[in-house]
Image 1 (cartoon, rainbow, N blue to C red):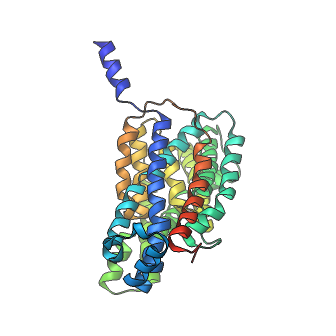
Image 2: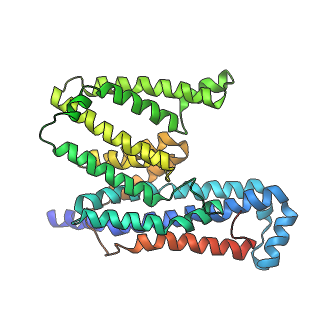
Image 3: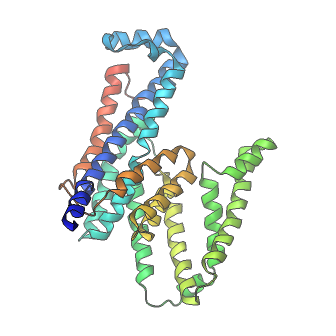
Length: 346
């Protein structure tokens, strides 16, 4: 009977490489929508109309045109579906990043790989999503790089045996750090419910909505701190305070650099690491953070299903596949857009 149970468990489990393949496929679909479908919709079909779009497509790829391609609503609905499928990718990559952080034998090389491919991917990322080389948004490798730095800092705090000097001072300001973190997190969230609702009711401007959201986040941070530290000793409070300060710093760095998923992407990784003994619970908590950032991330909860089947094994050796695939597929999409629409960018 035990052998039968073991066989069934192995039969329905998946490895880390399988998770990575699922995430890559999801990302590939998502980026097709972002770099091809949305570019066509917002820079060809909507501004110039159906006749222009049809003539353009037919002049380059005559067999490709279909009637639905001339209806903006249909193209938009297809794009929404594609992007919803794409929401599965990033949380899985965050989960695998935590796994890599826990099992890598050389953290320095791990960081160098992330940093190197962040730089290599920047031009194809800019061209694919913005149609020009720009510094206004950075690719996801920058987010993952900063997330690993945040994990290193948080892990250092977790293992620190005693605190003194600056850390002691920080330990006494935990409630302030929590309040500031809550305010900043709320302001940077695209799904700040309270501010949006109040702003809509009273027809308030966007800056005022953000102030309201920030104030609510400030209060939430204080409440979180009081609940979290209600039954802990002074040393634990100090550890939580210092950890929050470091994570807030890296959250702010990601937001300041405008990396893909920003500080919320970094926060999602840290949360998954904190709740790591329970794979699915930690993963779900990380996805929840992304959903607070943007309601468009809600479909990402579906990715908890393959994570539930993860067996903790690496699987196929494909360490560098994602690193190379990421900039390569973006470059291919830029080329494809040129072949279809005759333009490299905006």
